[in-house]
Length: 209
Image (cartoon, rainbow, N blue to C red):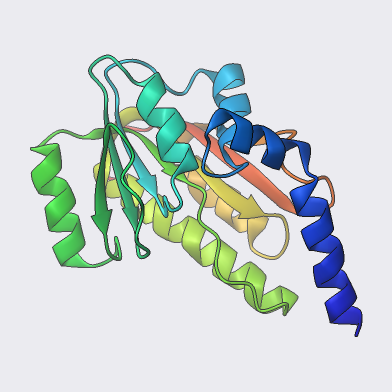
């Protein structure tokens, strides 16, 4: 009964959420677009001509926004295990970015070019078991960092979603080994009660780190 009431309350909150309503009105696929929008407005991540990879892109709101802001001349590559309705200006690869076949497809599209920016708004399917869920979130962030080590150019940036909890400080230390600057961002579109935050890692250090 308690779970039913909680789900009902969440649905009520969601359909009346100002960002949900705004996303529908403006044609964004989810309210998550406003999280990236606020961070980009503040930190100027997206610039014309960039090569950007969006990991875990579905349903595609980050890809929608990023693809627009890197024009003219930019290229946006989106990857996800799930299907994603095509987004104008986005080259989508369905599959697990940890698998060689998927990486080879991405590398073929890149044509030898290194990436300017890696984005990840990935989150696991939550079980409700806090320690287990937190471990999964940290693991996804670590996978994003591993991807950036290989594909991100020196001086490039990475933005990754994370939940504060076990493993958070250790992840930040791992990022500091690879990037010159680590910034914490909690955009207004992130629900206040959520532990969700974003780590913005700037200026990848040169060399194989």
